Length: 363
Ligand code: SAH
Image 1 (spheres, rainbow, N blue to C red):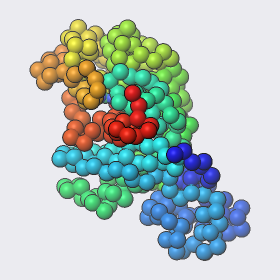
Image 2: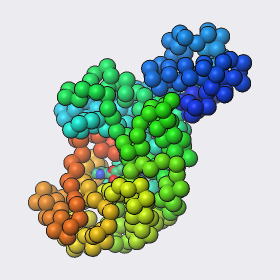
Image 3: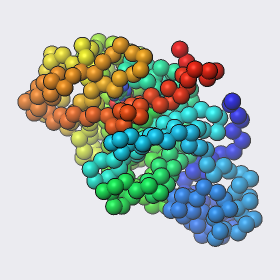
């Protein structure tokens, strides 16, 4: 049931603004620093636990703000250690976040929208269309909840709570850039989560104007672009929404950005049997990317339950990779973690929504 959202989320406010906001409320500026410490340092989930703040101030903040927007509707752990969360928002909508153990750190994969307008044929999130943008606070809170989970159940072999952030979950982050950038402001702020922009990566299908917004943005975060095909016609077959940049424009903008931030951009390419995996496309992609600051992630399709699309089999994946590498284009194969728990983009939410008897089921 959709409920009205009465209050702003406290994590939508930049922590550096709190000292002034406290002064405006008639309190000392240091109360603002204390509040930020409770929110981002200790991950407080109730105002009552913020015991260093005067009770009257806690009550006043609780009158004006909601402290949390996410409740864990589901938590699944894969045999490979990937943890997948389905979070329920205050209006009853749901989003997914994923924690992926890597060699030396864990990666938090965050959603930026409920649903997505990009309509990629291979993506589960696309099926229901765009429902709404997430607010900055809803994006930030995904990190807080994942961080809590990691602290209470540390990842074996990962001593510290080091994490990277990828905006690669549900949604198109450059279609919700204002809120995404406000969340990144809080990720990198010393009073916030204090994460280096080098540990943050944004993945995009490159809607028109999106890369321009990123280039004008405040933080040199890493860029991944989802390619989808070697030519504009092939790309449109699997990523059909009009209003995307042409491949040439997209790569020019991505290259300019990569050079400016001094980091290669990643090109993500989903390998779908008989659709994106012929070696002619591999050769075309090699020509597009040669001698430019790009590296390729080849991702064999994560199957959707209700689809006829199939992943490229391993020999085809290796052959595709070989063409790129022999042309001098770095190419890695990335298998999706958490296959046994439906961790591919948008799958968990979609299964839950499609449960028999669920009045909101799609199809
Ligand atoms: N809209 C953004 C971020 C979300 S998709 C974007 O397009 O990049 C994140 C990545 O997941 C993209 O590279 C996309 O190609 C990939 N992806 C989506 N569905 C997938 C599937 N079923 N199998 C493998 N990769 C998938």
